[in-house]
Length: 126
Image (cartoon, rainbow, N blue to C red; front, side, top):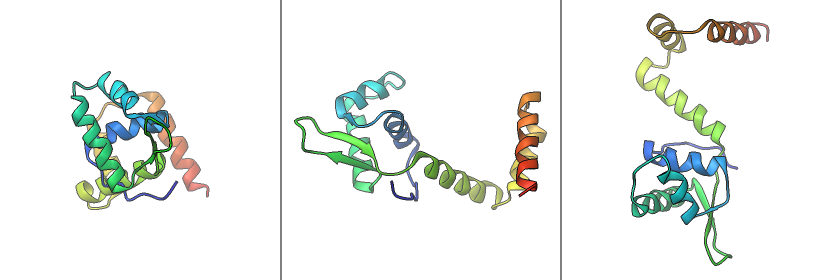
């Protein structure tokens, strides 16, 4: 899979998540999977799938009677790209500001605090 510059819409993310979970899938299977969570028409889902193919995020196997779609980008790469974009846009690139905001404003469980401490300690020991 290629490294991604994951500039995709929220709706496109839903289709991508389906294909990252299980691929390859026919358009019928994609519609079924997306429709189980969203009340979108099959035409909308087909349009999103086609758009993702045009953008280079999905590939299509046209050798079978029913086309099968599969991701061309790695989920983890897209998540990291989206995270960096969010931090840059909202917090001017400051991870410190983002973390401080969440720690002050959100309810964080003891387990989550321990996990954050573990990650920070691991990062600090590198």
